[in-house]
Length: 116
Length: 114
Image 1 (cartoon, rainbow over the protein chains, first blue to last red):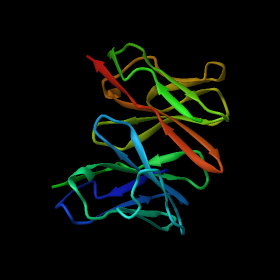
Image 2 (cartoon, helix red, strand yellow):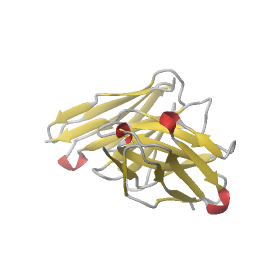
Image 3 (spheres, rainbow over the protein chains, first blue to last red):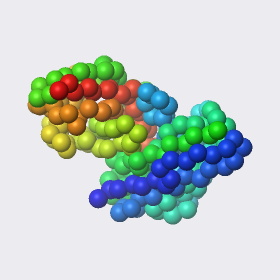
Image 4 (cartoon, helix red, strand yellow):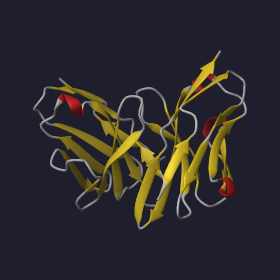
């Protein structure tokens, strides 16, 4: 149980285009999902907390207009990187918090984004 | 304030020998503590967690960790390393006081030598 999926696993796009990444909790409901960014050989940086049915809470320094987050249902959150630049290239990981198990976050496999 | 310190950025052990990955934390309140493992180009997998129940926690793949409040530590151990244990390990502190605050350690890269 407690499986989180991400799609796509890898994406290459041109500079200036937008990319959508999906995060799904497959076998549990998640009122809260989290989006992280991981730079090479670095730890995870929390970008935002996504709450079902309400606006996401962004961490300091993260541009909300550039990283659009939508949490439309209890099993799906999406992150859209708008007008992507090469510096947005990174490994993006989502996690979901099980409603029945509040402290634990389950992580998706990550999405490797490369902006040319 | 909440922080996590993983004392070693890189640990190298021989296959079959014990593994010790150290983690110290500071938190104003009783936290929940986790260890996650990340294999190259993969997401994070939960190894084990402490959430105020038994202080000695057993996880998957033979790993275990002991919560020591007096030492503010949550070190990860395994009696005998396997080649497949080579990965990055993250110690994570989560405080759930209304707004859930998550703090990651910088990670420890475990190398297993055949």
